[in-house]
Length: 355
Image 1 (tube, rainbow, N blue to C red):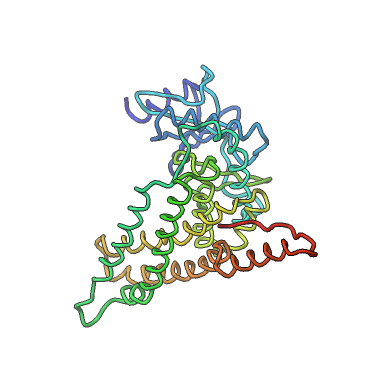
Image 2: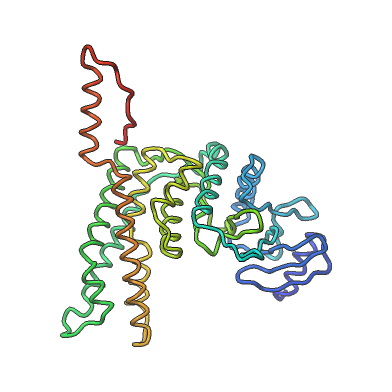
C-alpha cells in the first residue's frame, strides 16, 4: 500500500472519507468538518503510545491544559494501526497568532513544570519503568570526553589552524572541567543513592522551540514520541539549554519560571547541575565540524555557532554553581545547626540539606 492509500485507510479508522490534507513538517495537516487536526505517523512502538496516551490523558483530566488530547478512532482507540504503522491525531494549533504575539520561553518552562507535576502520580505506579542512573550512561559520557581529545589532535601538526580550531583550542580546558565535574558527580550520586532517583515523571525528551505551539490563549507542548519516564532534572536541563541558546533567554529566569509552578527537590537540583554541565550541543557542533565533509564557505558559520554555544555554556555554569552545594554552604549550615543546639538559644528552623 502506497503512502497516500495508507493515510486514507488511517482516516477511515477515524471515520472520515473526505478531507483536505497537506504535509507540514513531520505531520499531516487535516481540514475536517469538525475542525483542524494534525495526524502523525510515529516510530514509537504501539505499547509505548498507549502508555503515553494514558499518562497524558490523566494529566489533562487533572487540569494540565498545556497538552493536546489524542482523538479516538471509531473503535474508541487512541492509536490507529495500519500495516505495522501507528498513527495518532491531535487538534491543530498554529505556531503564531493573528496579532503576531509569540510565546515566551518562560511560558514554555511553566508548561513543562505542569506536565511533570501532573504526571508524577501516574508514574509512581509504574515500578517497572522506575528510572535510575545507569553505569552505561556514565560510560557514554566518558567516551564523549575522550572524543574531545581526538578532536583536539586535528591541526596540531599544522603551522596554521582554522578559526574554528582556534576557538575550540581556547575552550578545550573549560570543556574538560565541565565534563569532569559532570562525570564525577554522576558517579558519586550513583554510589550514594544506589542509582535510584527521587521522583519519576513523564519527560518530554525533546523540549525545544519547534515542539511548542500556541493559540490565542496559551502555549502547548507537542510531539511526545520520544517521551519517557525519567527524572524531571533531565527534561529541565534540556529545556534550559535549548531555550537559552535559541531565544537567548536567561538560564536563571528559565529555572525560576519552572519553580514557580513546581519545585525540584534538593537531590534533583544536584542532578540538574550535572546535566547542565554536560556540553551536549557543543559536542554535536564539534562532531558536525570534524566528522563530516565541509567547505571553506561554512567555516565562519561553524565558528560563530561554536563561540555562541561556548558563551551560553559559560552562562550556564553560573546557574550550576547556584544549584550545587559548595563546601562553604555546607560549613554555614553546620554552624547554624551547632548554634541551634547551644543552651539558652532559641532553636532555629532547620535549613534544607542539599547533601
